[in-house]
Image (tube, rainbow, N blue to C red; front, side):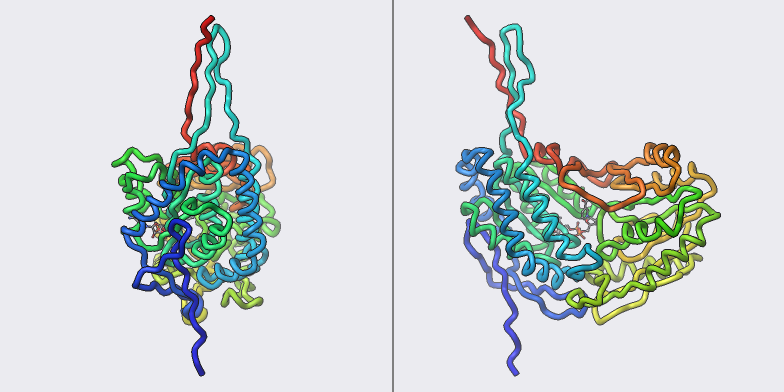
Length: 478
Ligand code: NAD
């Protein structure tokens, strides 16, 4: 019997499909079956894409804000019309189930639609900043030019939308480089969006760190937006500095959740579990460590272990799967090693940590009696494993939560409003959640403190990050 043909997804440069000679294979991380191929992009492809974006920029910038806002709505409509196809592609390349208790790839497509529509609604008006005494100063917002976007593999298309939509709305053209682990959904989306966008406005070049380096170094790039690890983000920032190119960096996190004494464990355990294991823990703003009082440690650990034991890890295409695999081999190896080391150091593995399938499936692990020094607490595990650490006093928990180079998000759980508010105020993070975690909204600004990032996404503040301020300062002369 002949094998079904494997789909190929070309790059999109200047509105045209582009495929260089060499092909890159993308595999389903659950069973390692071949999903599709894409070209191995090169630094020359980056140069061509930047040239195409620069050529398209004057007309796109001159189009006017209302017309570009309308394009954002039309982009949302494209995502809506192709939601099923794109969600399936994300599941195939990323591993996450389509539904996954409401937070699978279908949810990711819902986010793509929602963020597109919200970006169309923001105001981008001129602002009178001084008037009187014969002087009038107006602040205008002008596009930066060409935006270089570099995306990771955990929420591939949603993060692409977070980069693309505000950039386009503000009048910029875009050259995007997706992660080589999950390029296909971005490539297919680019093909679809190029059916409505003028040629050169949105280009996608595939490839690895070399291609990303070229993009962040390029003199034709006026802003870089990067989502990925802190280590790579530092390199991107160094490269961008060579041309004094503006950067938005959304980097790693090691989010702490503090459970205050007296919390209703049965009520909060499902929320804590969701916050830790959304997308099999491969979410920048997921709970990565839980601090709980000595008195409630065992009760919470058992409640989380019970939920973990009832969670089915499987192929994302199967309706029975609650959770997908890790996305790639290095991440799979890292999380397994951190679990094993924690157990050797005295943690109790109450559930999970076992292999599922031939790829990178791992059942959700709950580790009790962890300590601050363990790798699984001190590092960003970015996978399906949650450590619980005991505390004697809430102040001790706050000190341990803040003792990190990261400051993306944090949360505090309990029923005492004063304790919740005071603990929230004491946590050093870009977002502090109360009795929830890992919730994002297009109207709510998002960004990390410390080494979790630089700059803000979402809301009008996020849109303004894709503009330059231009002041028109006028003196009236009689
Ligand atoms: P990564 O840093 O390995 O890769 C991210 C992207 O950078 C990929 O496209 C990669 O090919 C590219 N890249 C690699 N080397 C490069 C270089 N030298 N110059 C330019 N680009 C280069 O990150 P990842 O493993 O894909 O993603 C996981 C990380 O992303 C985690 O640390 C996670 O916390 C973080 N993340 C953060 C957010 C946020 O909003 N803060 C969101 C999602 C993921």
